[in-house]
Amino acid sequence: MKLIRFIFVIIVSLFFPTQVYPMDNNENSFIRVLIGDRRPTSNELEKIKKISAKAIVNGSIYQGEIEIWKGKDGYFLIDVVELEDYVKGVVASEVGIHWPEEALKAQAVLARTYAITHIIRNRTRNFYDVTSSVFHQVYRGDESTEETEKAVKETKGQILSYNGEPVIAFYHACSVGSTEDPEEVFGREVPYLKPVNVPSTPSPYTLWEKKISFEMLGKALSMKKIEDIRILSYTKTNRVKELGFSDGKNEKIVKATELRRLLNWSVLPSTMIKSIKIEKDGVIFEGSGYGHGVGMCQWCAFQMAQEGKSYKEILQYFYPGTEITTLNGNN
Image 1 (cartoon, rainbow, N blue to C red):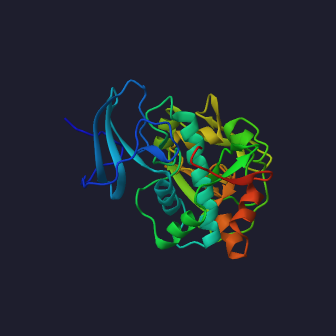
Image 2 (cartoon, one colour):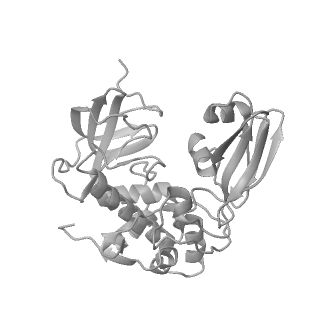
Image 3 (cartoon, one colour):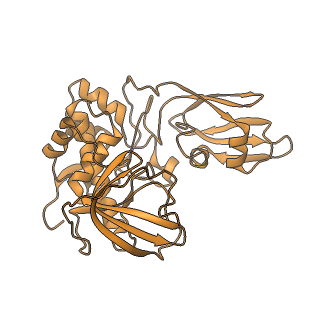
């Protein structure tokens, strides 16, 4: 029997004695991370083993308390790890580890805020708080460096809040021109997440070109044939809102945000599509930016830090009206 049927491959698992974290208390000092991006379709799972361990999974080292759960979809690994150690891993995984200190601090506050929000939301109703993939925050385990550890230590316990509650800490890799309105992506307005103009950055995704095969597009859209693609509408920030895919007889209208999801996000870097060119064997999309475009632009934070902005100034720019608060032992 295959013990783990993840999308990724477990290369090696090594187990060593390590610190045991509390498992059954509803505390925010630790976080439960589902390793990988494959999520169970049902909460009817059974915990079959718990080991204080370090596990090397697909080249990443996860340490803490490792749980193995079994459900109708197969087996799942949970890494139960101290919150601050998790934040170190997220910062190292999400941005360049040698980025300016203030950009790393801004990312640390957001990573911690995002984690706390999901702990509050999920702890009592699910067997994990977040996944280790882009579905939540990228967490590749213990990959921290001296720079990331310093950024996390100097912001220890700090989260971003609005009216006394942790914010919805959306962020993304790169925007060009301006960030996006959350209503266009997530279907709801958020008072502290309004589109803002952003500086030019050295991001490799300032301009991009992606060729997607007809086979991949057809499979994603459940279409046997695609003869034409039209941009039907734009958002206020000049991102594509809807596209029309025609098989020659009928046209299928698809939201650009949904198309990214159907293509597993990274295939189409963003919805800021500038042009579409149909070729014999596929479609060439040209565009700018990477990610959903809501909240802090990580590459913009890099640029702002390079220009002398503090992490507090960066966060206030992207999340106006919010404040930084510090968790205490009772949070």
